[in-house]
Image (cartoon, rainbow over all chains, first blue to last red; front, side, top):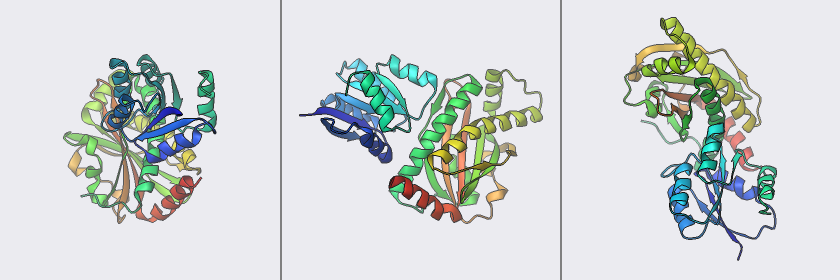
Length: 121
Length: 203
């Protein structure tokens, strides 16, 4: 069994970009969610030990997902991947418990650098 | 009524994501300009007639009067307008956060043009970069001051058959400021746009 990884973004192109940026040979079980509400459901059912999370989404946005993870004390490592590059957006998500913040567009290099920082690959 | 888009769902999704990234970059510029955190929204893509421009501004529905400015841009074979539309209370709000005085409509006009440049100067080059294209942007023109939303018209696009519009809403957190950025593309660039999106999707 690989690590349960959830990719949560309302854009199918963005979800594919994250998938293609994952390190090769990484032992993971991938799950996708196209909005925050689907995302938090997947996390509750254990499919998001590691989560790549967008911020601007319908139903529930990324901030609300982070807040729910915190409130419900769910075990999940979240890396936010967003086009919202305001420094305050980064501070807010880190304050809500996200591990790190990556600016869109995602790339293999950017993602690998972050994963290496936390010893995740 | 807005009609069915002249491209596939996959192309719509791709264009929306590119606009999402470009608008995010412009959101930072706006936050810097206004000194307030900017709440971003999901870009909305529509296919409308030039006379229905107010329908493409769904985030402003319910407001009384609006003012607008626009810049023409050309991106490779694509050309279009980037229009900034703000509500009346946005003027006073933005003036107070930026420390300006709105003594008359000339000052309002200047504030609107500066806002338009602030958003477009980041959004349009970022969009071009994502689409792997070069870009040229003309100076902004004031289109209207304090007109009722439903009477908002844009004569430069009146001769277009249909318009692909992308609505991007910017809201200053806990402030009355409410502004729509509207990208307007004519029918004749749809083919080239789809080709560009297709090539990005196949990368």
